[in-house]
Length: 86
Image (cartoon, rainbow, N blue to C red; front, side):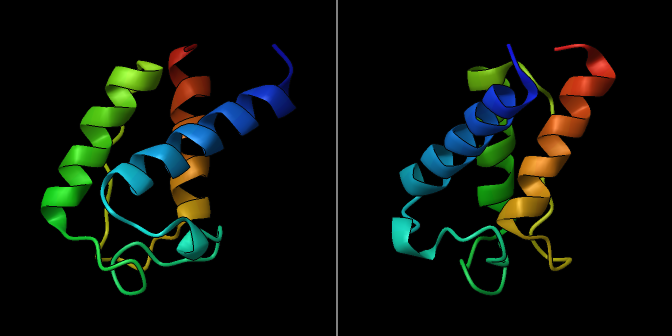
């Protein structure tokens, strides 16, 4: 699979997970801040991490209080996939 396809797959998975948590699709710009703008909390962070593990088989510790954005989350997943060879 090409790098672009993997990036799109991860982005689509993150978007789907956030939408499942009740985030409006219109709000899901890569620059949207998980905690402040999307109003996600630590419980949501755990749910996102579990969903990423289920969907992509990638363990990721998600942070929502440090100004992380949707784009940061996608980059974190991609980095973890590269690190673990997923």
